[in-house]
Length: 227
Ligand SMILES: CSCCC(=O)C(=O)COP(=O)(O)O
Ligand SMILES: [Mg+2]
Image (cartoon, rainbow, N blue to C red; front, side, top):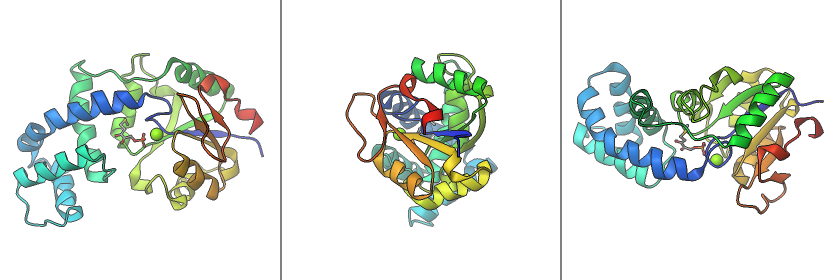
């Protein structure tokens, strides 16, 4: 059955790993402590702080201890849903202040625009929160790319290395798994998507191969019609 939908990862796929590690994560580490102190009573923030206490196994942690836990999770690149939600809130302030602009590779911008015009439905699946995903594409160096996308999925659909997450996303997209092409730079994510029945294409931007998957170094080399 022909591909109808394209589901893409962000970090290392549409966007540089260095943008996430050298720009976004340090920005969050710098601004998150004061953001949490100033907004700890806000309902959406308080809900995430409670989730940090629960997931961190420290139900009695005060706000300063929760901040310490969060900074530790940033340092170890933990894909924890409450951290990702709070990072998205902090990054929003940076994007709105013009201090952040989302990096999206020019070849990805060009291909996403073309595929959208050709009628493919485009979706994102990232460990970054849905808010963070909307910001990186909505406030990108190439302008507002958000009209290209039909939907966004984050770790509330499950971890990216588990096949069940891709089954849930398939339900959400509403086409057969075999009609979805998943793009990622991580072989374990591609393996999980394939186990769920999706077509896969690996991105290795520095060259090389993602074992067992068609691998390219640029979106310019992806033809959805051949999968
Ligand atoms: C939405 S941009 C920030 C990405 C992020 O926080 C992250 O952890 C990268 O996750 P990905 O699943 O895109 O590799
Ligand atoms: Mg990635």
